[in-house]
Amino acid sequence: MRLEEELRMNKFRSVFQKASLNLMFTGEWLMARVDSLLKPYDISSQQYNVLRILRGQQGKPLNLYAIQERMLNRMSNATRLVEKLRLKGLVTREQCEANRRKVEIAITEKGLQLLDKLDPMIEQMEEDTFKGVSRAEAGRLSDTLDALREEHRAAGG
Image (cartoon, rainbow, N blue to C red; front, side, top):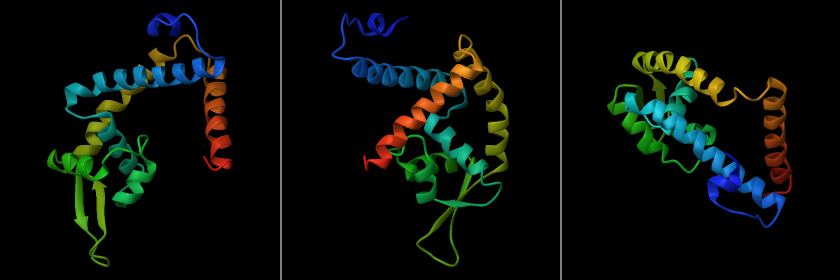
């Protein structure tokens, strides 16, 4: 369905407004798909993101700041997310011996097993989401979005 129909708008102020709204709307739509897939496993998309970040460390722990820097949604409360994952037995949280103010977080075997279960489902959802889009189009879309962020980063915004 076209954005005009989704938002019940006949006209946009500019092509840039339409592109901005389309990007936000589609991002929310995609996150809702991910959330519905994760819901039966009692895990949020932000918690899933933390687990994926920790898995990428290949057994080396990370501190909260490093996790926060790598998150898709950097406004998420990493402390709260990590604590919820710890209570579920999916991560460990330990004080660093060398620096008592530093807390190190690592994924557990249970967390790795959960990701092993979720990965094929997420991959299938991604394939289903982009079924009408060629690999080349997906690559161009990704490159365009990278360029958009890079332009503003270079300008200091």
